[in-house]
Length: 261
Ligand SMILES: N[C@@H](CCC(=O)N[C@@H](CS)C(=O)NCC(=O)O)C(=O)O
Image (cartoon, rainbow, N blue to C red; front, side, top):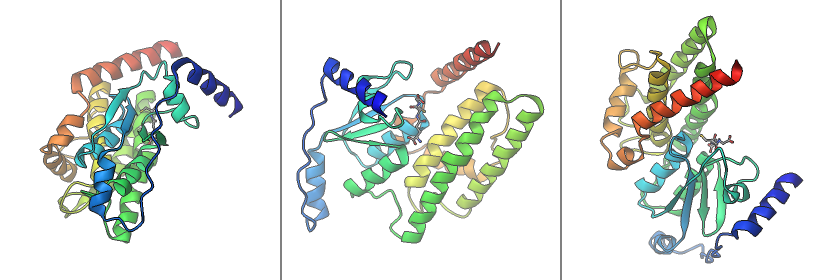
């Protein structure tokens, strides 16, 4: 921790600290409309990376709520001093900076956004439904994304096992969607945002790897839902560009292969 602190301090000297506009005190009884007006005047910055499903999901949440923000693209091979300053614990994107105050971890950021800008709620209103949305979002991050990452490194028998594991996990996710328009109910919400960015990212990863694990035949319900989600303009805007992403994944795989030789 001490090391990080020193590094950040020297970064601050070099680039200067971002303007920190103090958040105005908000009286508890203000109407949501007034809060909304105040929030509109706020300064919102998103530190992200174009190919990251984590930063894309935050971008999508901001767009669905119509929150103006400044996007800062990070080069993860040479992280900016500001990123290290704002997220000293994990040193990862995404980071949302609201009036100079940083928030890290995409799921935490999404909840913060929903609580701060109360229009177009993305988390369900019912406590049980909220708990379920959080449960499945955690499942996506801690199980599905982690298993999907293993495919890149596995080969032979091990690769087959990883693909079986992903198939099982996607089936579980699909059963959560069964009989529903969207994961979150009649319109797109928190879990749809998390899941949709994952499936777009996942589709590209499997294509780049030349594996066939996520298909319409195997997952008709998920694919039906994707079709609807993709009609939403904000989703189209936040989709990771396919060709650029395929090239990026292939280049990274080549680099990994050469490094392991
Ligand atoms: N749990 C984090 C994961 C974020 C994450 O893994 N970000 C990656 C990019 S996809 C990153 O910044 N990696 C840089 C590094 O690991 O050094 C979240 O949900 O925000």
